[in-house]
Length: 356
Image (cartoon, rainbow, N blue to C red; front, side, top):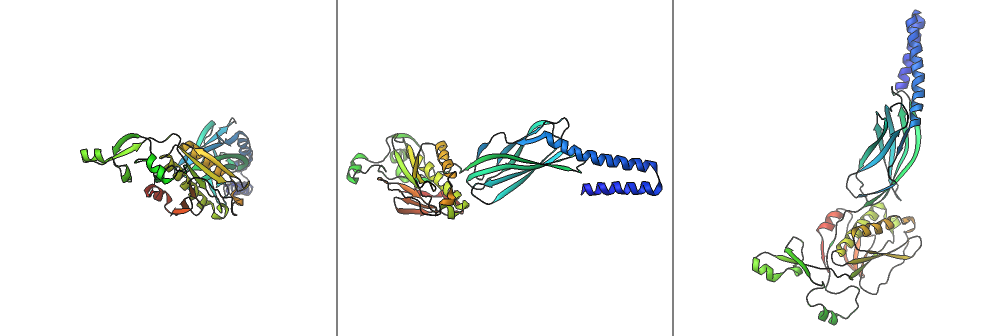
């Protein structure tokens, strides 16, 4: 629009100079024409010196939490950049929806950092890409286009919510008869009391310290040391993940993380099994803290779910184990415990308590 308006102004000045044979108007016409040409080449010159890049090629975020993604802006030219616009694309890997952001900034000399704020709504891998930018001259008449191929990978993890799970008084990896368990575990499955604290909403009645509570008229809860060699097993059933769609896979990852973190409050190690959709093989990962849980999720994010529409290999563990499938069904062995729903999943995770 500005280009057309400026061109119309030049033509009008030429017309007036020819109509009235006025030398000053002729000089004005020449000046406008020269300025028009200079602005054209200036935009090309400014484009050559401007580069945009990501300071790092990978990062992480938590679902639903606003993050600021830094972008490095460097102007190598001698003249400052008056104004530029750049296109930033954010797309979840193996998903078709693309979110586009337009970056605008001006007065760029030397280098600086520009932050893009956004809140990732789903768990998974986001591919961020700077695709093209437009650098304008000082009158914003012309813009010079520059293509880019800057990319960054952002892993979006669930929040550290944990399912509240009260485990039974037997070891899940022990096939000892129930009569022997009754002899070995006289009261609780934990080794020894670590501390006592006041009762909080959601605590299990089985851990109330009745003697101390009777003395003080306040409910007290016994907290136990975790057994250093205790282990529980979880099977992440990825069958049908391709057909389930990206939002369902995101809910599955969020629920799997909550299950693992909930079990880690009771045992030292959680072993997670899954089948690779491409290799049709079973893999597993031993998890002892939230960082290892996220490393396991990252491996699941990178799987090719386009081949996960068919049935994948199952698993047959000797002991008792938990499992979770793409229908958000939560099992102990093959017995259904609960079926979650995508809607308000985070709220359900924080409020629901399972006593097994």
